[in-house]
Image (cartoon, rainbow, N blue to C red; front, side, top):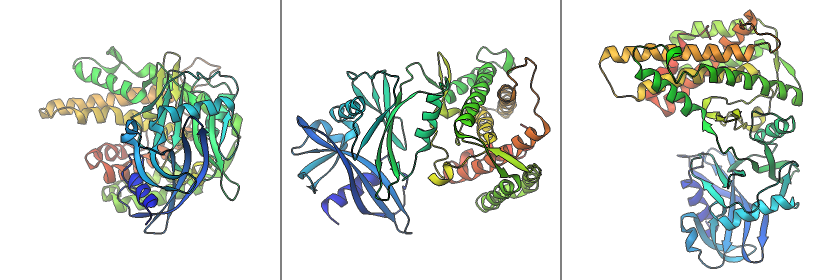
Length: 461
């Protein structure tokens, strides 16, 4: 193993954004996509590292690198390694997202709409603040985001896959449609694979200065309810129902805009139900407790199978409260990459908008029960009361969200789901809950009771 390969292996293995934790791999290839150069500072290159796991599968990870002839002590925390580079000789390599000078080069490349092996594609309509000082955001897990003052944010995709990234293509369509429920897309970086496919590397979008995380806002509302022992959810100052309704309206409008931009197709409901049933069978192997609820779950799937053809379209694909931001101008939906565990080819397929609805409904169930579990153990009566109030909060906000989502904007009347919509909600909620059971069993076993309790309620929103 060369010095370069060994250094890249160690850096990727230990990186926060590496998704293959615990799996053995080798660095099987390194490809240079291009260089963002400036004669007054070290070159910045973009390399893609191919990892091959012991089972033969491969993944691609992106590494923008500063290649310095001499050590850059200010970047010690981002040191990748020291090796002989095929283009620049012996260099000290640093992860470029940590370097203000390197990221300023990227921003200026967007302003110039540089084209070449690395294409900096820019959408019209926004004047970039070229004086903004870059700062790496430290909160992300799977990507790296660099803030440019209060103007824009560059999201660098670490794990990349040949083909169009739905986070870019979906956001572009919504931006061009004038959606008020997303952070506008300003541009993106792309390269081309050897076989001519696009390789999306990063996206530049609007920075939402006043944004607050939807999950955190919901938890504050739950905490307020728990602290008021004698009040119901609709009587507490932090009642979330009006926000839940606004979220329902926002999602409905986004789905309408995506329908217009990408069109609508249909799939056989029986095929969708069969796929859900297969996921349930696999899930029971992981979570045997699901077996006692299998008949109820399969009943929801069977009802779905009887609907004939289902309309499908471009959707968010991984929607929950953590993918929403509240700003002074309303709710924004973020991260349109889809379910990260699915391959890109599946994430690009049209799907039922009711999958997004189910994701939000399950999130409204998770918030109060997660808060209840985070509080100190108390006497049994207090714990029982918390659970009761958690159910009350969840039911109130799910109803508000669902009513607003399904509302006819031309009428003022309260919305009641049609029988067919009720079947869709029940089936997609059941499918999402089964997924949650597997996830919690593998990652947070102490949280498994949350989705397991919900399984027993399948059949009602």
